[in-house]
Length: 312
Image (cartoon, rainbow, N blue to C red; front, side, top):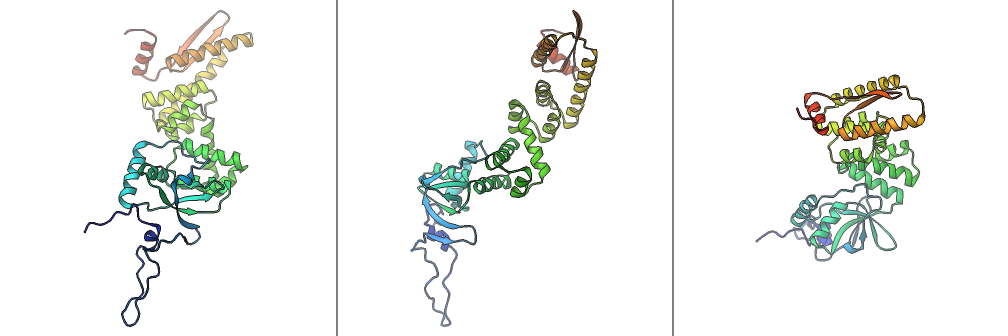
């Protein structure tokens, strides 16, 4: 006889699975402790809350969900697993006036909806807004489901929404305060750079170096060079060091009489750097001066010349 799949079993069958009826001294079986034929609506599960089977339509996503990116492929794979083995880990929810709000398990919820399930097994907990937000963030961190930017935004939202300090967040999610501070620094990077980090194009090691650049235009140049040139962390440190040295030399060698001229030169410099994706220094004195364009190697020089329309 073929083995039945776990999908579609009643809650009573799930809870009573593996419970055998105790035997008397005469060897005859007494009534079972829990019966699969009589589903149990709620059962106390240690300190985790209540095990219940509820309508999936009554569950709404958490407004504090830190994870923003869900790929169709991963939801499909999870749905296939649930179809084969059942929902091994219940969803974590809290009760609201309208129904239930998800605390943890959004991927599982999406997979169950993909399968067309009408009911799902949940653990119902009493949780405040702050507690629900922290628990959802912790689950994602423990499962490594968040990219660095999502983690940083989750931490930032905890601090802003519930007036928590970095120390308080550190204690709640059990991560060092230094890690919290480093994570929050990522949110000071330009949106474009944050996007590179989210997609894994730039590592946290690279990002740490980029946070030390005070000019966003220069930061974008180095970030693009990391991706285009495949710069290592050490290469990136060298590039930033050269950039700062060039900036210092440019400051010393530039003699401009008015703030307006300064602004014009900076604007020209930024436009050239953006066009060439290279570090540029402009030394302007009166009506004369020079433009210095930095390149990393021969290949980079060829790339810059090509952008300038120079054939070699």
